[in-house]
Length: 407
Ligand code: FAD
Image 1: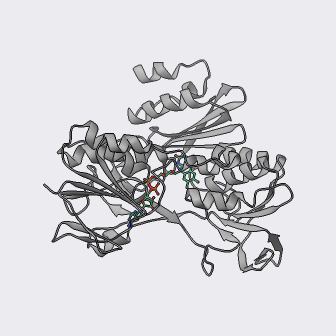
Image 2: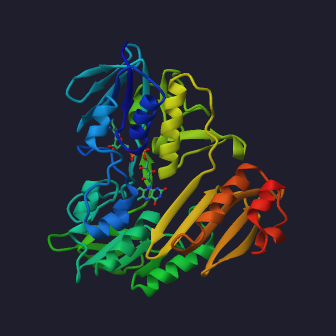
Image 3: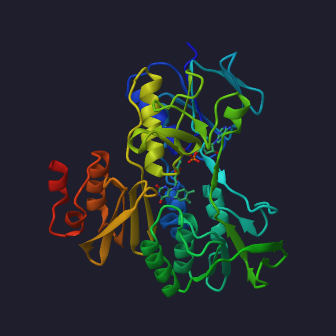
């Protein structure tokens, strides 16, 4: 028996490997990853671990892989999938045979056209990226961040905590355009400004010069931003090349069905690299870059590799921490026509988003610490239940969300 092979030793790949063992799989499990570290969590890289200068937060310690008889091949990159021969080929020519294969190759930072990451231009995806960026986060230094998405903003907050000056360049008229309502984005931007972050919206980069002592960013309107480091945070690109070269369907990610099977029934894909149809939103094909999704899909892929038939149905969920604020987003808000606001105390609130038919499709919350966590959890259940609530009831703080669920 050849066993199961997982390409990509990140959150998703590691969770899938353990899940296979936990579900009783007795064959060989080989987990192959390009990075030299044990699989680790990426969310802390822009948050507390960056501020603390901490080492990677591992998904599990080395002994647990040994106990679970998971063969870890780290610092090794799969270069080719030989579907006819049912094996993957590594960069050094080694061939690893498989009965079933899981692709959990994740995503990589999108590069600013015309620039390469290196020198004084960086991106933040890996622990090594974070360690390199942190060297510049000292009192008196000045970093420029291109992109007002979650990673750019979290990095800005961490940089301010460490005393670095921050200029954040966003090409669009506001930060967090993707997936966050303007009302919440405005609160986030104001807080950053109050913490001293210089946010320039509508900033289009014309030229970047990586000079010996500084990086110089020239904007289309002629403004020049000099910095000791430029961190490019303009989104991520799914790592689909292996799948594509093997002739698997790719559509904004490795295309899988609800069971996370690719167009080859012996090859599954999960996590950031994957696009999948979500029944809750009319089988619309989506790709998520979310920690919980990577975990859930890793576990589900494992179950379905073992013959399970469960479709991925989880409500998309994402969180972000900036200063003492936490944002949480459940569902997909882009079909919303009605939004109602519900106060949850401590200055926190949740925006509920309903579609044209009055169905609850998403909820976005912001507040200090865990203030929105409980209601967002309930909102997830309400979204999954496809309820059509009375907007006034949703907005009223005295309405128990649990009651709506029971109804
Ligand atoms: P990855 O974690 O990208 O792992 C894929 C692995 O596969 C990588 O190690 C890669 O090197 C390896 N690989 C790729 N190709 C090959 C190959 N050919 N051979 C061998 N190995 C290969 N999500 C949230 O929900 N909330 C957050 O607050 C949040 N914060 C984040 C902060 C940062 C800085 C980053 C980068 C991400 C954050 N995320 C957050 C997103 C979350 O971390 C990702 O969704 C999650 O890591 C995806 O897991 P994955 O296993 O699918 O992919």
